[in-house]
Image (tube, protein in one colour):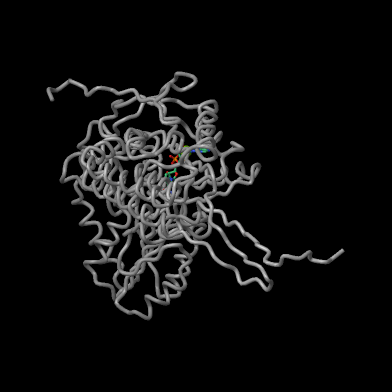
Length: 493
Ligand code: NAI
Ligand code: MG
């Protein structure tokens, strides 16, 4: 493309009831490429009226539409066809994802593969939902039936945009729910693209509706809407708390995944090279914009100095660059807001601890929301950089004495999403697994995530579990059915 020629800025519409329509207000807002700071699309600025329309469509589809009478087999096949479409278009989707959120293309390709896998997994699980026969002490048959929860409102973040959409849409659809999905305002494009295929793969109108917009004007009305039966949310702890309060008025089912300040613990006997890699991968993958980022790196004192030096040396060699270049290992942060937030934590860290690497903006980029991968060491666990989620490539390295000390520091956080422990001693490893208060614990690794295994947090990292067989349970109600087998009056009166 000749210099100075811009790609077309596409204007999207809202996807409601199987159609692309204008938003009520007709207003749109810009979506950016964080590497160039240029506008790449315009999307509808949805408001409460749009939410009402989307929820009405979802409610009608749930109650009266053909979706209400689909079999589990048919729902499974719909999800398989959607997965297939995603696989066929994986290259374009990965490119759009990388461009819109700044992640390296190689990582975006992994994400899109996981998106398809997620639809396949829940496509298979659709036919494995079973109820129970309850052994009640009477001449009766007692059943527990599993039924879809109804209309699901799904509010997702910008760090893994299509993957977060898949984690919520796939189990909901397998269960027989209908959905109103609100992507993050920064990164709505890949979700809008897959909307193009929903009718083709066999989803009736209204089963999935996608509204773009901001949290307070499009997210909040969805949370408050009386016809929405469940809210699934991934995002900040601050918004999670608002959602729980607002959902209370209509007693909605809520599941929350709110990130954390996850400890990555290195004992002196760990494989040293693997440990350094694991520490960096744990905190810097996806620019550190990861809910389970191992942002507190706990290192046992005998290897502490050597560890910080080795991490620093490797960090200085990390290739920052445009997301679409295949050598890029770290792209820009998603937005100006997130850039400023992370930059401010780099400054806070300089007052609270010692700086080993990074700490600023890389000089080589004139534009784009790039920040240097940053390592602070001698961090006290009470420091803000050890307590607050930064959501960027900023590591806080904390020394510890022994096993007891490590577990105490690791658990001293309001969060509890993830933790990892590195050692060759299986007794030490298993004791740590048991003692760590987190929803996901890795041993000698950090970050691998599989659709087959549950994901979610303890404490203020949220509640409910996505993925795995339990992921579909969050979209199911249990109906107890009692069938009297006595053909006579009960004879009480
Ligand atoms: P956020 O929590 O504001 O946004 C996440 C989603 O919630 C977006 O779709 C947003 O539009 C929606 N939202 C915002 N306010 C809402 C409201 N009042 N009612 C309903 N929906 C609402 O996160 P933000 O501002 O983009 O990032 C701030 C921090 O949140 C990050 O620095 C990071 O620490 C954390 N975060 C955690 C994530 C995780 O995976 N757990 C993902 C994204 C952000
Ligand atoms: Mg916010």
